[in-house]
Image (tube, rainbow, N blue to C red; front, side):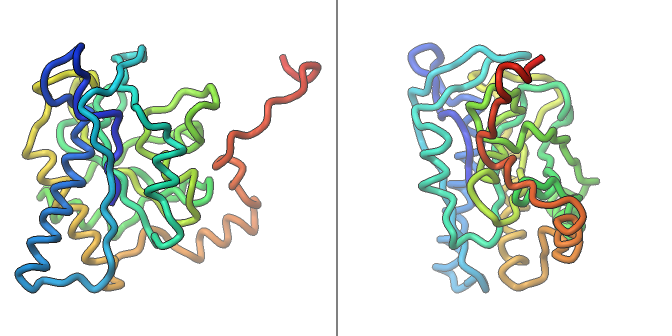
Length: 248
């Protein structure tokens, strides 16, 4: 369970907890809940890794339609610390409010991404979203550029799928969303009920995955995709620019 963000605060430009800190807050809340559960004797069948970073003085940067929160830590460095070979599946929670495509209040999940392939949305995860929220699940759209590494000059929705560039494990984004475009550096924009539902979904997924009753993707379908179309792992890299005489 990974919490992604630029930072918890944008001091001295902004005073207070910023919208972009929601991912860290959910991840740390999940960790606290797991600790409390274990103390009371509720031990999960599988191991759960929870990771995020905390920074109250993160920079901001221009971005449309609203400003982005920057980060004092490079995405590649965060991946190196958080995304390890031990992880069999990854949920990434991140504020995803500064856009015009995920325009509903609450949280949404992404299609499963594995080794550069955007797979169909997991039916098991959709079931768990419905249980955690009591509502129909929301799924947010991805472009191919969204699953490529930061720094390649392409537009990214945000950093939510960056862990997929550093692992062969299946990755699913858990996006905290709003009906309007809210800047990541805005204060007073944290809605605890939305975060509670997202955290509940993530913990229920961790329980079900450890028990073997939740799959992030269909292995046979993934293998068939590879046989028909080859590897998409190049999308996990910075790629290569064409020679000057080949550029339009």
